[in-house]
Image 1 (cartoon, protein in one colour):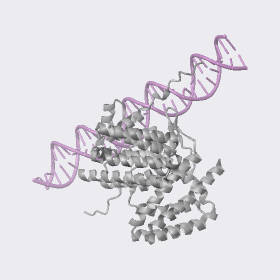
Image 2: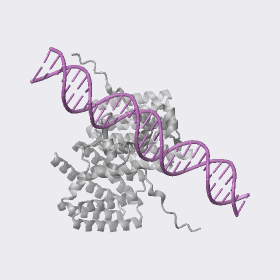
Image 3: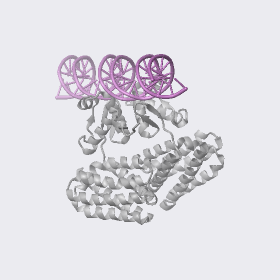
Length: 224
Length: 224
DNA sequence: ACAATGCATATTGTATACAACATACAGAGG
DNA sequence: CCTCTGTATGTTGTATACAATATGCATTGT
């Protein structure tokens, strides 16, 4: 029998996951604003499903830190104060450093090659002025490093932390004056990884994240 | 009007939270074993509630990493391989070090005093042979440090990581031969915090966590 | 004997119904 | 005018009903 027709049964996703992804996207893109109420019936009718998958999705968002619910009052999009952001950035700094250090010894030649290409793509994206494209290219760059750690739990933690600052990072990337610095920092990280110099890698990554942290904090303070 | 009768309305907890806590406890205590199926109807009748709160609790456990669900198959208690545990311990090591470093500069005199008392309580608990009591006393010790960071997100992350290794840590604490080392390590951490020596604190904490990590890994290997 | 098929059953996925509670507002009473 | 209370309404909390799918087993055909 020909086994070329194993059409992927991954097509199915429970509605709760569809709803979860949809709401998460909406929150990160800013379509759902911090403090905005997440009313089950309203969301259900808007998304054309019943309350059940909505509720389950909300429970998941809650655990991701993207929503907050008060019993018998309902859920709302999580607000991020400057303090919250500082707390997240403090953790992210440390874990990104860990990821860099671990990746340094575990990254494969093939992954290094891919990182080099993606670094170029990032630089190209800076020309486009398309902020979301730039953000995605940056995400890709760091994802290679994350995956090189071979630690899936670390990867998902870092992705979660990144999510939480996404809204503000987008603002930061609108400022073209920071691009040269970004390029240099990526360069430094790549080179350090290529030479497998743990000291350099962690330092470069720390520098990179710290700069971003400062920028993000400034943006929040401006908004307040 | 007398305002002394503000009896706390916190008495109410949604069933989903009750179920969540119950299941989490059961998983951590080992009453629900890794790989064991979490069937909604069965749990519902056992806990005397309907499927709805059970399902929501499962979604929460899922995000905590304590349960894994396959669509249309159902949820089961997460299995922990040696690799999974190593991944968790790698993260925990780094974050505990971060917590120690941050706490070092932010811990109050009052908290230091409390830490000192709790350290004594821990030492007392070692005499009792009651493993769960010892584990709790150890948790208390570290909790003071966590809270001293003033970073709630870090606290909840560390609690979550601790949860994931709880089952194995219990085994580790059954071995009385490690007690003297534990006492010394706690002592070193406390002293370093009292002298506000960041270098010493992080080193002591790293040492402490690393020892525990090694022990936990040994236990898992024995079990396999 | 064995593979394929169909059927019964168990279980999850989703929708809906009902209950409990919160909120806002109007009206009664002071 | 103010306060309190009752009521109407909206929303969440929980239970249940129904649909779709997975699983195990018996049966059938070869």
